Image (tube, rainbow, N blue to C red):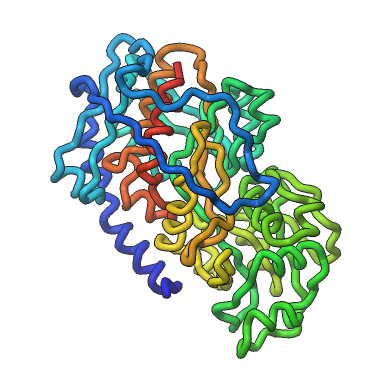
Length: 437
């Protein structure tokens, strides 16, 4: 099992190789390279994905992935160039062994003047974006990434209003948001997941499922030695202690994906709060609230008996702080932790049916080894930017961020327990980035 010690060891290894990766990115991402080549998009085969029923997105009219020969290229700004293609040895040194560099059918490169890409939003994706700040600036000296967090709801609203260039979100755009902001793109840059933590000293490998969690947050299960919890954990001594549900107070993509699991597994929740970045939480006397993922960790640590949903990018902080990590039951009945393998299994199962508009739930998908709370990490971006240089900087950053030899290296992803976008989805992401002008 991928336990707490294994995760710590992985992080130490990543810490050791990350400086090397950063140096390689600096050397191999010269903004003065030759024109890009184009990679033909692939079409994923159709398949069915088990999602929360209410989460099914309609298929809005979108532009299907064209072949590179038919993609309209945005006009390049003066001085614009394309990112250099690293040699295979450089890619290997960056931690992307065997990965091919990304080619795109539009102009990318260092803008002729300095551009700061302001970001607000998801506290789950925030540590990852912070990790990318320096290597991006090393690759493109005139582009500065400035992430700030604030919750997915803020990211979506700020990007929609145009007060930031990038809005981080764990949630895809709803139908209403698409109608309100037809020029707003939701562009995934990585795959993430969410853990469920608890504060019960001495209790390890606790098993939970979505139905039991829903009943905790509905106030129907109020004590840790409840028969429903004991039934999932034969042989485990669970204390006679009140449950303290911890929830987000801000508009949160973590709330969106957690509530999506509850919606998929509990009829009362599905017909009641359902899911969203904000939901109408049932009144539970013992509940406490927190702001952001770091706040969820802190509040849970302060309240013995707590249960909390926490994004994997800060999960190591939760584990180091003494919180337990629950094994969650998936659709196949297996109890799993959020590991690289179980997150990858879930996205592999779900990504075969990713729509062209990239709005997709990866919650509770089929598969024996599919972890049940997995999500795309989105950046919300206006397709029409205020000027050509900002458009160039935005396209350049996004293309760099999903390139497995640049931003999306194993070292960068593992540092926050993220997983790379599946290759079947990347052509659709490239098409979406190409709409930015």
